Image (cartoon, rainbow, N blue to C red; front, side):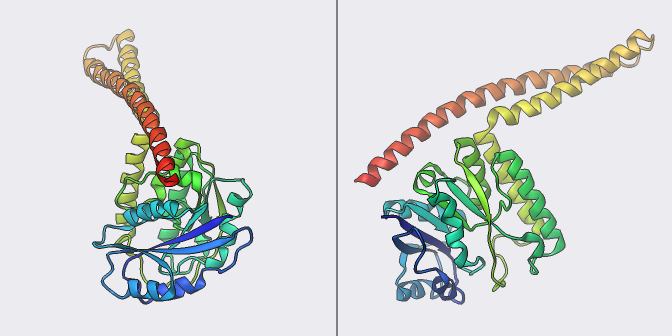
Length: 313
């Protein structure tokens, strides 16, 4: 028996939720049971009543705490309900639910542990040219940093195998999309992308006020997660840059010194010392961070074992 749970984080979506629920396929090849799980993130409208009347499973969060928190709670609940595959989609009917079968196919075929639906960004009419450029650029950067094969990093239309869902931890309060990808790369979770369709926009995005606010928060999230999961690479890179600048300044001083113009260029030597000392200190931080990451991996292994024991109970 293969059970699929489609989780839908929801906040004040009474106008769109029923459309989203009706679009979820009733039958999918390779799936024996489909359950819809709505995570009501402190809605003040009739979203909960709509979900109940439709017959969907419902989790009530009394106070709105954001998309990332709703996603985290949904994953935990889906695992406790025996999900073999978990699909996350948006309550505003942004993603074409008919593509769920396409989304979970690589997991059913054992070709991937997680799948991200890739939108055709350049052909989405509702996106401005600036947003399209930043979306493509951001996805390319995150693809490189996370070492995952993902073409649309911000996409919330995703599928997780049970094992990969057990390994995922969401710490960020803003969004889970980038954090889970960096984690996947660090934890050896195989991620692939599949092309998916989108429906016409029913409302404006609530995740960010403008594109620049989104970029700022995204960069902050990426840096934070990169420090947590790739500390040696992060700090070693900064140490290398500082060291190279220091060496260039040393070479500059030596050039003028051996050409008889050493006087007046002592400042190069002073700045070189500052950069070289900083390089050594940052490299020590990189080593300490790497040791701490080993401890974190051991703790995460224990956490996964505990989760499995609790789920068996």
